Length: 514
Image (cartoon, rainbow, N blue to C red):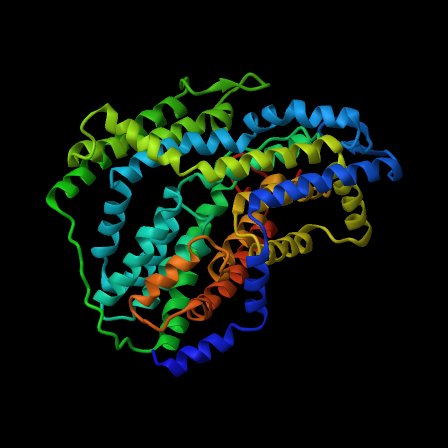
């Protein structure tokens, strides 16, 4: 790529996107944003408690009318609540336990090298005709490994494209689009599912709504979305990105690292271990008198309780067991000490999340305690009903609002912890299920990850691109990824519209309406 072309790409992304970058860099850390928001709630509650009249509304779940008023935190009783509840707000914060437990298993699979080798196996042995689709698909599927896809799939995407004689930055872009642009889609549940579901449930509980969702609440929609994003990502790569990049004239030498015999044996043993685990779990869940079935209110045996509470430990084992089998085969795990080391290293990376979770938990609980969210949602629902702005127009608008906010605050959990207490109850009161609201959020949140410099791995991916083009910079990456972002948000929203019109549940026991 010539210097002139690089300058042209830079000019294309100036203006709005450059302003977004400058504004975003001035924002404080997400944890500090929650501190600021918590203080704002405290002060706002004092004002609203004096000027806002109590509201009465019909609670469909309770089957009766409920009266709520704003509760001030800026008085003696409020101050006692702030100090006395701080610890329990944190320890009872639903996303905290779910993420940490799941990460114990993910950490073992990542530490032993199972993720790395599996991804190399998929990418380095792919049929050339399916190369683009496999790269995008592998990127989407890598979400189950949390951030592993960023450091493994994206550089490998460039590598396999270079090996096939295609532009390596196109391969990098295809992988990046799958990993980050399709962050919420997958064929299996990942750590994002319980994380967002936990925040949604906190928002419902804080608003006094007797309704809870489980980690699999979006599974049907996310499963289908995987294939949609692979198709869209493949089309954008081959029809737009590669044509814009032109033929690759760099001198990069492909250094393919083959899968060794012991790594192949490790993959085989990990696959066997995973299959045995899935068979055993399937029997325990789906046999007529399966161990994980419990009676519901009607006395019927179901796995609803397991899906709500037992799924997270099951996810731990889903990663830990094959990870252990792989590590034992390759010699990475020699004793129980190594297993504990793997888990410890996984937990050591969660320090920033723990800080964020503490302040996020305070904000969410303050918001619920003061009833501000409830009153906003009730008044907002009444307003939307008055102007007729409900249903599809509301959902579509919410998707694009989320995508815009994601340019300034890329953390999925941090953003949802701010938005859920307002939008989940609001949409619930106009008849839209929390599962549907969460899906709309995930679409908007995922599709603009790939064009915001605030995304944590953005700078690292620029460095990957510079391996193949020394003059590549921020503008190069943004201008390359912009077609994916636009195509993904339009295509994914269209799928949401079709899904809505057909009235298909978005997950097991997850209706579109309440």
